[in-house]
Length: 220
Image (cartoon, rainbow, N blue to C red; front, side, top):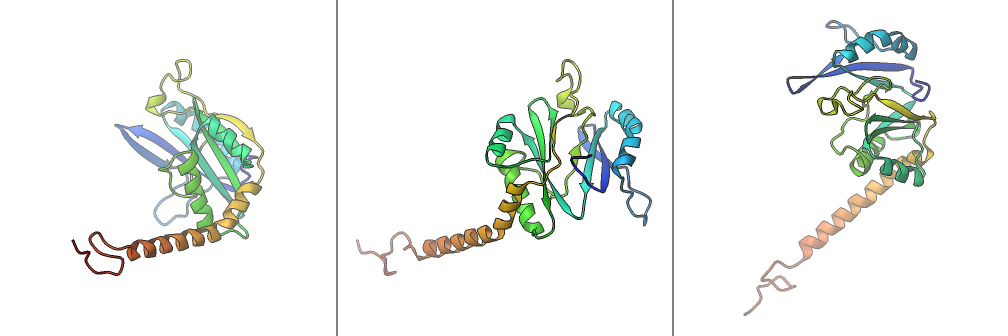
């Protein structure tokens, strides 16, 4: 929680029932009632309850909610991918192993001065390149360290038991490299759009098969 540093968290329990994923938001109230969000201390006080839920097969997730900071999740990252990111200058605020060989890394970027759509595009590109290409939604839950990963495929993966989510690194720092990349994204996207437009113009200007470059049919 010190690494995440968010003022509020959403707690979600994900279970696998008859081959389907079933999610439960523990802060969801009755119709018309606002969602209950939890402070870090409140989550700590819920650990006995969450431990019991986990033992019954529930996967425990938290979503950091912070109006000052974007929490960007990179899922299904490999050790090699993590080393490459660090070599490129990226500094994750938190790194955890969710199952043998599978890593989650979380990057913190200030919201002030950044465009949310640019952050979202970077989040998707980052996961397409290094992690889970199917992941969507910038505000994304991550597994809570200290609990077991109850996915059916991980049964017995850790010495005969289901693997625990292990915290590997926790600096809590903002990522300067990610911020620089995000700030450059709007211009980069404009350049890419311009290149696509020019490429389409050139494609349309090419003569069709059987036509000369001046538009008339070729003579045999």
